[in-house]
Image (cartoon, rainbow, N blue to C red):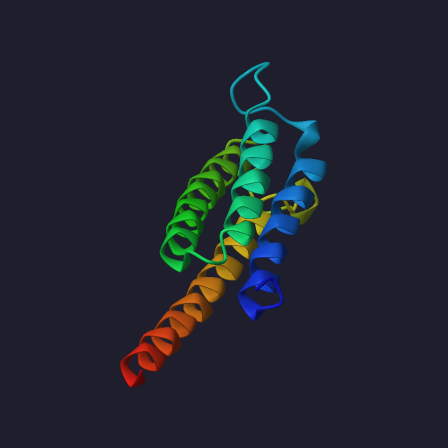
Length: 129
């Protein structure tokens, strides 16, 4: 069912990846390679695959954990990029790019909590049959 609460949380994580894609067009981590853009497109596709695999909750949890791992790596890379800018990280006008992977990690973590809750509910109903 697509109208579950975890779908909303996964969609918010997808929005975080889309906002990162939009705001991260002004810098590059590895030269001319659009690394951030490629990772953001991958995260959006991973999120939509996770939403559409609502019947297989274990796969949905696995896809969300992969998304959490990729977002955590992306958060580390963005923090490294901000620390290597001239002037350090003291100035907030340097960018809000690290906020979006952090938001996605939190949303995917909450989605996994609700998916596990559904899994326990289904198993308890199966025991009663």
